[in-house]
Structures are given as structure tokens and as C-alpha cells.
Length: 224
Image (tube, rainbow, N blue to C red; front, side):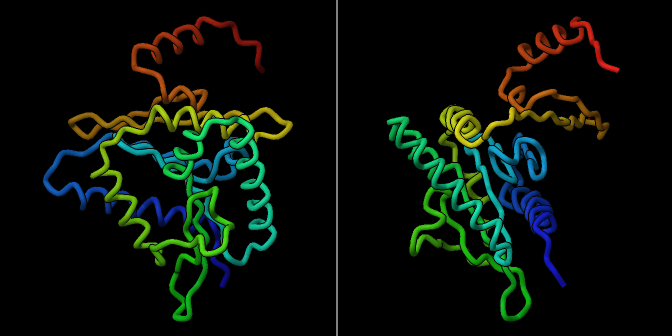
């Protein structure tokens, strides 16, 4: 039976939640932001998954080993991005890219288990001998969880600049955009959702977000 990419991504995110909780031990939870961008407008210019933790940001593109056409298209995107970064003349952006932006190629092993054929920084994904450990999906989950809990370098500001650059470099001819929902849970277990109209709103402070939301509410709507 065929293994679909969205199934792999879903299980990666599900497992990552448990792994982060396990790495925290008795420590309190950490603020975590998970954006599943696959098949959204932002997927075409960013990647399948955007993860934000207190200290790290990870932008991950998943590809199935059997998707030869998809892999070829991704290789062309890597070349476009690398050329754009070189033309920018900002070596620090390339350094940030190799920390933040990742490529994961997934396949089925001899024992029919889900394995990682290749995991590498996005810019180096199609270079010879670019594959790095881990080799199994559960190893990637464990590694990502450990980095999320232990790394306090706070690369978010640099990552924000890089993500904006990637969107401009890879967006193509069509404008992109995408909103979402923020899940809020209170101390009593009550669950509420707050709608955001753009992923860029996630970079705002609470006061700035409230001010922008108020301005939008006061703006006349001419939709049907």
C-alpha cells in the first residue's frame, strides 16, 4: 500500500508532542507553535512544516522517496534559493538557513518500516554525501524534541528575517497568504481558538496583535 506524505507528517507532529513532553520531565511546558503549511498557500514558498520553540525555529520539507517528480521540483527550488542567497551577498543568511531549514526524504525499509532515506539542511539536500543521521523517523522526532528543549540560543529573530527572504525568493508569480487558528487553553482545561488572518501575525506581541485586530474589525467589509 502507498504511504502518503501527509500521513508521515501527521505522525511526525503527533510523536513530536509526546517527545517534547518526555524531554521536559518535571519541568513546566514550553510555548510551542506548530504550523502545518502543507497544501496551504504558504507551502509553495516555505515548506510543509514550520515549528517554533523558545530557542529554535525549524522549517521542514518532507518528500516521499517514490515521488521522483516532486523531488526533481524540490531540487530546482533549492537551486533557486541558493542562487538568491548568493546574490543577496549576506553570508549570515546562508548560515541561518543551514540551522533552520531542513529537507527530509522518507521511504520504506526492507522490513516495511518507515525510514528516512535522507535528512540534510535544505541548501545541501542534493549534494553528494549530504545525508545525515538520523535514519529513522523516530530518531528525527527525538532529535528535534531535544533541540527544542535544550537549545536556548534564541535564533527566532534571525529565522524571521530568513523566512521573509525565502517567501520572496520562492513565491513565484502569484501572491501568497494564509491565516490560521491559535489554540489557547486556560488553567481549568477550557479550550478557545483565536483566528489569525496572516501567519505574520504570529510574530507580533499581544498588545500589537490586539491593536491590529481592532483595526481590522473597524475596517468596512465588502465581501459577500
